Every structure is written in C-alpha cells, then in structure tokens.
Image 1: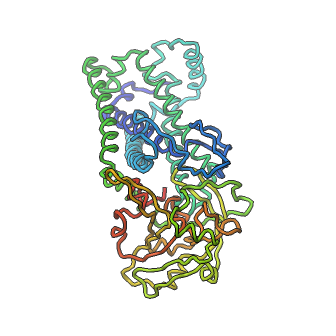
Image 2: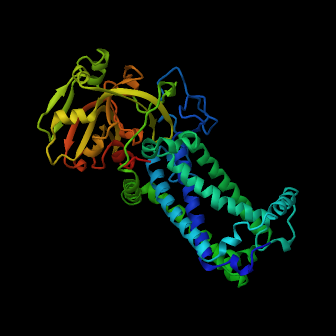
Image 3: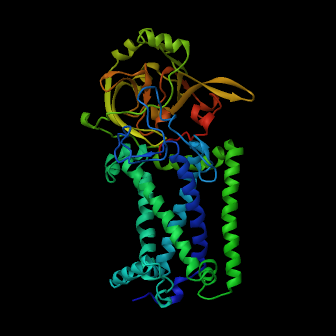
Length: 501
C-alpha cells in the first residue's frame, strides 16, 4: 500500500533540509577528493604494499630503483574538482571535510528526528512486501529507457522509495561508521571496531565506493526530476508543497542552486588566498571536535608478528644536514639526544644510554595522514622513562621534538630552511604506547624510517611522529616554537594539530 495521505510527502522543513544536504554533500565530495589526491590509491589490505592497490588515480607506478616517498605520490587536482585544489593541500582539504561532515551529520540527525516525530517515515520506509516486485517492474521499465505510468508516482515510484530508504538508512550511517574507522585514535583504543570493516583500508575503500553511490544517485535523481516534470517537481522540492506556484518554485530552485555554486566558489577562493584564516576558523572547529571525542583515547593495540606488513611506505626525505649525514656514516655511534627545557635534569643521551633503559616493544598499525597504513614492530624506550629521568618542572605542559630534518620554504622571493618539529601534551607523552623507537621489526631503525630515533604515539596520525629526533624540549606553551601552530606541518601546510582522525 502507498503511504497516505499524499500530503505527508511534502513539508517546508524537508525543503530546507534538502537544500543543506545538497550543499554539504557537494562540499564533502570535493574535499574528500582533495584528500584522496594525496595518496591516490585504494587497497583491500592494511599493508598497502606497492602494487596491491585495487584502483589508483595516478599513472605513476611506485618505483623500486630509487628513494620514493608517499609525499612524492601525491597528485595535483583541479580546484574545479577538489577543495581547494592543487597538490598536497591536504591540511585545508581535511579542514573542510571534517567541518562539513559535522554539519552534514547534524542536518541528518535533524532530518531523522523530524521524519519519525511527524510520521513522515511512512513515506520513506516500506510498509508492505509488495513494494519489492513493484520496484522490480520499475527497474525493468527504466532499464528499457521508459518511464513508469504517472499513476505510479506518489510522488515516488516503488524503486525510488527503496532507493531513498537505502541512501538514508544504509549509506549515510555506513559513511559515518567507515569515516570513524579511519581514525587512529578510535582503532587504536578499540581495535575490534576497525575489524568490523576488515581493517582501515577496507573502510577507506568502502568510504570511496559510497561517494560513487552518492554521485550516481545524484545524477539519476536530477535526471528523473527533469524527465518527470521539472516545474511540478520544483513545487515539491523548493516549496515543500503538493501544489503551488510553479514559476516561484523554479525561481527558488535557480536561486538555491546558484547559492550553492557561489558558496563553492567563495570557499575555494578563500582557501587559496587566505589559508591561515581557514586553518584558524574552520580548522579550529574540527580540532575542537577531535579533542572532545578522541583526545583521551589511549592505544590498546597488540598485533602479532605474522601481522607485520611486508612493505611499509615512508614519508619524508632524508635529512640533508651535514651533522646528521656524518652521524649516519658512523651508524650513529656519536649520536647524543639532548633533553632540555623546563626540567631539573638536562642531559645528553647516546643510543647506548637509551638502550640501558627498560626496553619496550609494540606491534602496531601506523596511520599516515595521506591515507595509507602499515603494521610494524617498534622497539625502544617509553617516553615516560625519559620524562622520569628529566624531572619536568610543574609549569612544563608540552614536549617539543626537534628533528634533524630541514625543509626549504619560500619566504617572499627567497627560500630559507625551516626545522621539522612536532609536539605532544605532557599527558600524551605519558601514554603507555608513546615510544622513542630505535628499532623496527627487530633491526636497527632504518634511516628512511627515522634513524637514529623517532617518536611513536599510536593514537595520532603519522606526521605527529617526528623522525630523526635531534632533541627533546619541555615547554610551558608550544606557541613559542616556530610559527606557534604546534609543528612543522601545522605551521607550513596548515594541518590540524589534533591528528586523532
């Protein structure tokens, strides 16, 4: 039986909700494609072994005869497609994605609440099994390039009703769930959650497939709106009424679409011309949400040796400083880690000194901000042991990790070298799986992965795990370091300092 009365199908709040849903999904798709462009490969395995991707959006095959990083793998995307467009605009793309995702979910929750409190759920959720054979008849009709009889539309035909129910109650929740399954904080604290989808990379692939479904649904939906009577449908969509002024409805539809297009142009230009403003406003909103939902989660990962990835991507080029290269030539025998700042016991620790401290090992999943992952065994000393030796002052609230890596940055018409650094709160530094690693998979830490010493914190994305550590500094305010954003990526590439998702 078709839902009755027919007037239940239309309402003003549904028109408003429909407009914002279109706006938010279109922004999510563009910002999501920006994120994908930074590692344009999708996998069904969490090892992300080169050549094992099931689809790639780059012509480049990962070379085996030279040093090649995941950053080299990033591709440029047109600002007509991605938000904000360009190459390696990952930080800004993520800001827009998470900001818009929060608004899209809020809009969706409001929609579902109103759907059930007003009784309009009967217009969307099938109430009789006979809808399935009738939906099949509609499918055959569409597949043979015909339209079902007008009497079948009330205002949806059975196939459309099932499709809308599938999008709202299957695809939308699955989009949220797979998005969360890509959070290192979430799958670090609750490893079982990622296993629901078969691992992070399967969740990432499903997330992308859902985007394809949304895009296909949109194209079919718009096509049917035109084919089944555009002015009449605009009365339903724009005015939220069963019957009404068609001219007014079409005018409102044009204004609505123009507004969405104008917003896209505005946010793209804003992001490209004022990236720091976007980071400070849109990014701050996303960071607040991350802090609220994920900041207290501690990693409980315990993979086995058989889970270790046969291949592990690297991110970051080897330091070019003469000091690091000299140390590397001597297998870091002369390396000294400087511990300084607001502590009672400043000191220098050699690798030998670090190895005399209690050794800790953990087999965990690395989650790069670009999207790839890999499982490895990391061994070293817990950062809490170094903190115990250092004896921080009461005012020490943050730990800064300074790297040997220096990167060229454009400053006006010239370039200058900028140090790579990152920070953790003192609380994060004391987490049980926050490690200073000097071994990887039972061997001395490879130079490509951060030798002589690198940071591991398993509830964060990889860019927070500073490699090639030169010194550790305890401070009362990380805003005194660098440009004051909390790390090199945050300073120079507009990343979010939270990094839990």
